[in-house]
Length: 378
Image (cartoon, rainbow, N blue to C red):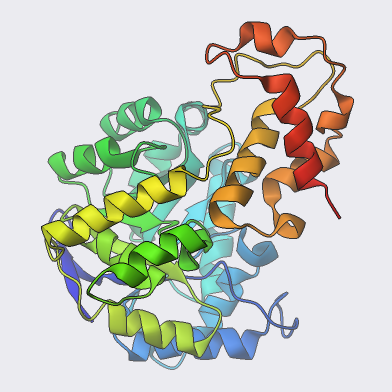
């Protein structure tokens, strides 16, 4: 296992960090998943050299922390650092923040957290956390020894990221990043900014929730034609670890074989390891994925709100994702939300308001009908 030093904190973390959001199996114990299997996977990763474990209060219907706490008994707690998170929805004042932290400590069966993150924030959520005194609470908990590091995980535009990271004294940041997200969310600019500020970066969604683990035909051909043979998963992780600003890459595993494959991959990666030819391959791979885009919607939302309640950007996002990554429509979160809110394209009355507002001058009405027909077929 390769380790990277978080210079600001003076600690070494495994390049592979185990994420505890994607365990599965039949419910058992206190959890909605197979606890025995999950405990075995966590310990298998730690025995292989993983020392960074990521969970959150809300993961696995609020049972992920319980499973991790059980896995870290028998001396395993001393071998790892734990990262967990405070969701905005669970706190409203100092008393509720204290109660939440104490609950998480009980679930994890530990007297302190290593990395404590304000969960999935953007500028709006950060302002809320400030309004209830969260930064001061985190600082006080550091002094008391209940948490070691004040951190945040981020989902939002780069401008929000720049504002937040400069607005407080952070010990670590966690961002969504992969070779398809270089211009999305924090992106390349956010990663480099964190590096310039000396703030360690932990990567989530390195495989885009698994979408990059199985390449479509035109992408797989690029991998197959390259002289060096690697799986799509290895190429994605190798690309991430090539960046010196990256401290840890999170990966959620459901099977022992996935743990073992990750241990193998992360035993071979170093910053700057990729050759010029390999970097060129990944640029070509990105373009091959992008060539599968159905419609060039940038989600600027100038078309919204639709007078009849159609979620135009959501439908186009689901359509593009299905085409780019062969996503399973039965489990597509975007599509599920659209249906739950009765915001499908079947509500479109062809009024034209969206097309008049679209700065890209996209054929929205026609495209909506095509998209909805494909997304709801069968």
